[in-house]
Image (cartoon, rainbow over all chains, first blue to last red; front, side, top):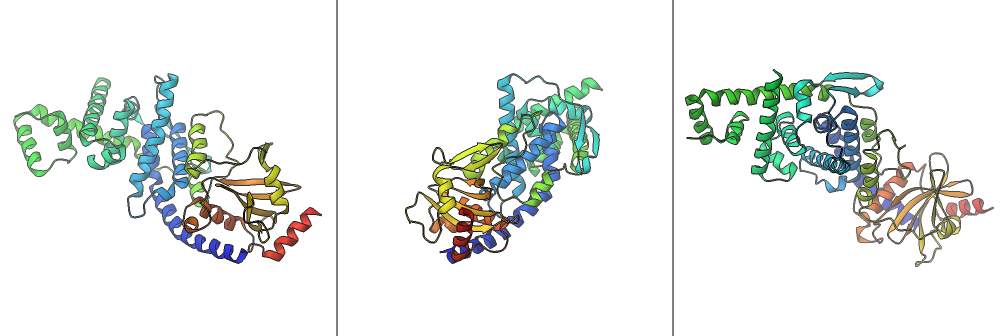
Length: 180
Length: 230
């Protein structure tokens, strides 16, 4: 009985091991970009890094749901975006919609060194866009996804994506025009 | 010939096919305002990319990379210390502990688990099974079944167990058994058992990961249990 269990343990361990390692390595490569996306979505750096952490956690828990051979980055972007949307909805329910975004970014980094990144007018303007426009702009403009890929990540039709994208970008142009 | 704002943006982004792009180019040649708008699209896009580029280049925050590198196969039952100053994500994280991990409810009989000082301890029938039951002699229809028994890296005696669809790993802590992990949705041993990533496989993988040496054989298991009861 125990011998049987040992064999099973070893078998599963090998199977798990190789697949797991690949997943882990790829995810690690995508982390900087995913972090950038989190910072475009969230209203401040602390929430953004929490979002990154929560997304990686969820990805580890759900890694069997990712199909090897498909794009891990798209899967991760979708996962992160869905986590973010949950919190946006929760905020909206609590009536916290009008908290102004932070202008500066205090990036907590390895070794507790902190780097201040100035997002500038355009970054702040992005964070003031309605969530649906913000995610579309972040995916296409900052993350460089094509319209089709972005629509797939957001699970919306292409037409919906382009109309949100154009509204978001026109709002940004108008705001930056005012400021200039 | 009119060009709508979506087309113009798509042109600026290089998303149009050659024929449509040609059409937009002709319109732009005839209307400086359109050319101006394309330039503004590109300028805003460039400044957005510039604004967020430093985030991508910055070193990753503590924790995220470590979490990944440690490649914890499951999230500990004792979750990380709550960050009370930002309860924002705790909800999402807590939910993910359950829903993401198990995709199946944790079901243990009332009275089998107790939470004391942040530790989850075995009680009732579960504690009895961990205290006395041997994998080699247990009844096939025992409500709680013992899987592997082993010593972890701290030489604690640990045992995996299953109760209906819920499984877990408990390690001896004095007279008590501290439950280290719980897994919902354990398939009945059989065909699905070997499926990588299944709760049963995760449980086994974790047992293997914390195990020092090999799982105890029948004789050593019986000796370890008898010694503990003395």
